Image 1 (cartoon, rainbow, N blue to C red):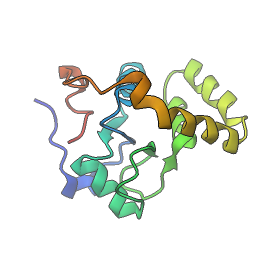
Image 2 (cartoon, rainbow, N blue to C red):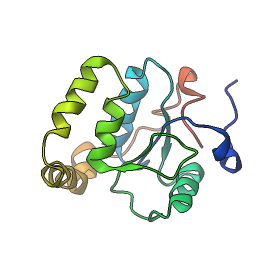
Image 3 (tube, one colour):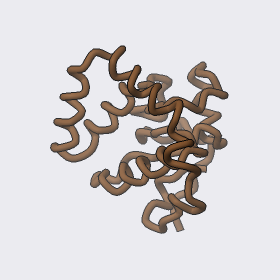
Image 4 (cartoon, rainbow, N blue to C red):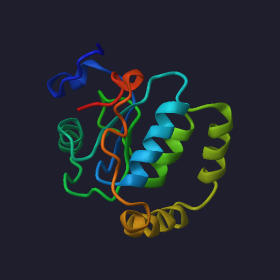
Length: 148
């Protein structure tokens, strides 16, 4: 059985945590890819709507009802986070060297352009990609990395 992650013990872990829209099929699929590609097995994930997600958002003073965003905490013990495409870039830089290069290329694109495209996708993602699959992130090897 995996390590128990408790909201009241968020300060006990310095793991990077990626928050995503748990009601988005595209988001779930992309988070599954991140979990597969993270060979260091360090990145933890949680839905923005989850107990862990809500606790991290509240602690950091972020809105708890904006689910069209991605939030990446490089260290869950800190309030510092990266939003939208800055979060995507930060996650890519923690994956393989090839994905880190993709992150560097994206970082060279002006943030307003990146976030504009991000918002376009966010507005239509549920219509195009549908609902998340039931149990889509329930793989035994991810039990320690998908937070409640």
